[in-house]
Length: 408
View 1 (tube, rainbow, N blue to C red):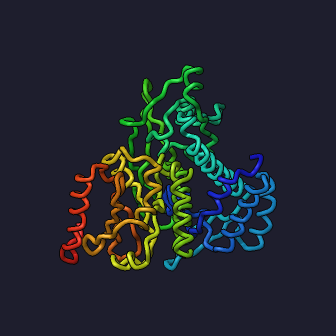
View 2: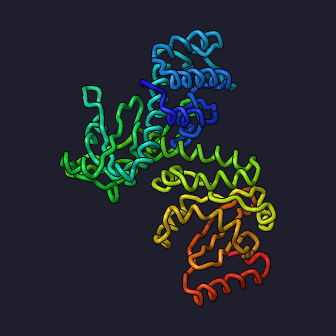
View 3: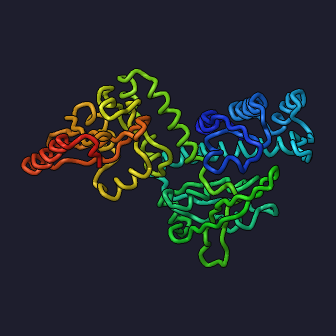
């Protein structure tokens, strides 16, 4: 484990809490956004376990330290051994509480997820220089076939494969990812594979051991070229903990920006959109990225209870299709457009900001019907031709003459 990687610690400490009886109740990406231990029904016990893991991450503590520190604490609080519960109908069931084996699993799984999330963030920040990622398994007698067959395979950093197969891919997974430059890729004679057309899904049944209720969950696999084999993740692991962790961090950032002084919040948004954070998000968008802070009066015009406007992964995908000419530096201008542009109301829920200058921009912000969220739904550059720009700006100004409620 070595030195404490700040990104791994940030990933883990940004999690909230979710008290669940069974790990299946908190599905996939939610695991990256909320800390949970199956079977824990008391928040104080969950806090003890989380504190132990946070200390282990920060100070490089071993698994043995974690087990020996937590066991007496959990014993005192009654979360140890087995317990028999009796339901209202008289039926009984045995609940497994804490044990050395369980603490070992908690330590290894949470540490692996945190370290992989931290490494994912670092790899994204360096993706321009090292755009190829290689899946590496620990190849020994314990290696699962699905992990062994992926060993050594290379995909681009933005390939769909990493959305579901970035490690860990199952309980006790020891796999990791190595980043490669173009030069290193050629020097080692490695071929690049693509997940497009090879990612498959399958529904599997899960049985609630308390109630017997059956639910169906989806697991994702990769159809391995030149092999009659599909490399499935374990059930509940078809997600990227690092990407989901970034989404959680963005939610926390949004909460702080909404509570901050508007001028400071706007300055913070400028910093975020101009830096590595936005580049990392744009490479693999998860969660909603803050891009502008509106004037309070503007937000109120469309029923917004918050002045923070964010960019969703869905809108980002649309923007890349329809406006591929825009660079990341262009998106760093959204706050400028909101502050300096002319404001045109287009229906009950939309504002259009027009920065009318050669090569200027148009930003469209829309409020949700409840008004609790604002989103950037369109962003594009105006023409440098004066006549063409004047015609387009004139058309945009006419939209304010529409009847209230004519949102589109």
